[in-house]
Image 1 (spheres, rainbow, N blue to C red):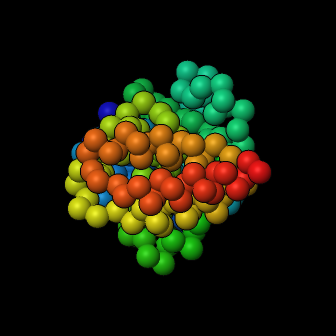
Image 2: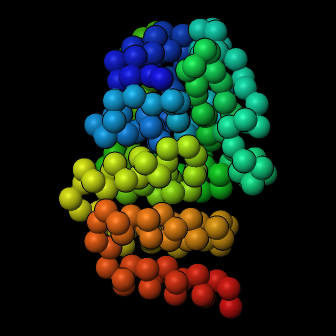
Length: 216
């Protein structure tokens, strides 16, 4: 497990090993730690805008002893066949899941950087980490379906008094043609959340209507 202090120190160290400035987007448990939802995570999840940025980041962590790891033990067969799979690197019980532009086919909008929290780590070069907003984080958690994702979604909803469900659903609808499973995954997650928070039925109706249109 990596705690908040470990993560900060690790990013600072990586910045010292970068061969160029790198920009990335933090998702998953990493984003939850930056946003104060949790104090530890099993892995560090990052999305890069370009292959060049990911290669520079990989080069840096390889200098620190991280090795590429197979996806077989980490993701089910369905996820491993999808576009937008990550490259995974580990050292002991520390792990990086490194995506480029998409997370299992879901396109991460780097224009969010205008409204996202930004954290800079300065070394020989600069590592700029943008943190996805809470709505994007919740949707991505619903998509990845990894161990503890449901627990993390519940944590976000318990802490946040309000969630912009329209924004979450609109993002899912916008990408449903390339990712037909996205509305199903989101609806399933929202059904489970009804035990923790009130979600008006109109939001579910919006999902069902969009799904029906796609199936026609």
